[in-house]
Length: 247
Image (cartoon, rainbow, N blue to C red; front, top):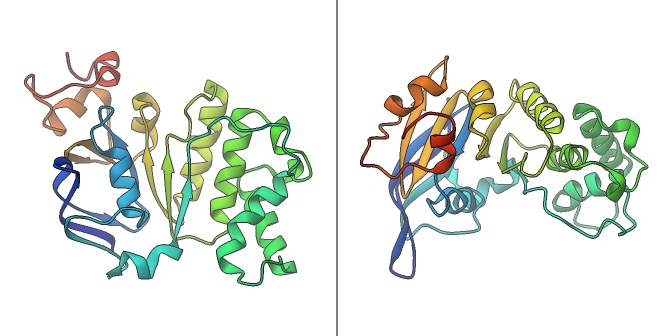
């Protein structure tokens, strides 16, 4: 079942196209990895799907409706960026922020708190619920941010470089959690970690102003170049060179 559909979407910053004539659909419980060079349009595509940006032309529908009517069905996990680690906020309070748009009175109910606890259990961070978030490792914090997104009860989760600046153990933990979550929801993830995303994604979308799609039950580095139509004359990002996809 198609749950997201983009039809001939164009977006420009001033006179420069960030995305041009982009069309694709996303099915229920897909796991999509968005890869491509810096400045190629990955973040712009994510912002369009979040409704932060509006296409100059073309159409985006989520569950058959205009994106603004469906935005509550989308959870978002930002990059694990630096923040004030001395800020006195607990893990459970961070996750409760995911209930804010569901609660117009500004006071968390017992149901909100139960949902937040269940979200922490899903990412295996329940035992850390009373800890200050600044005391956690990068991978642990990112799992808390995933729980915050889960607390909004989304059907789709968008993630922007969720394993950036996290050690290999933390990266593995994050991807394993996403794999488990993918059994019941759709995941769209921006990443430069080609080796990891190949192992977990069902669909790879290479974004460089336009898009190249590869969906296969057996993704691999060796077949990615041909499947994505990355030719010798096409701009090849350094991350693909490093993994032997193109030269």
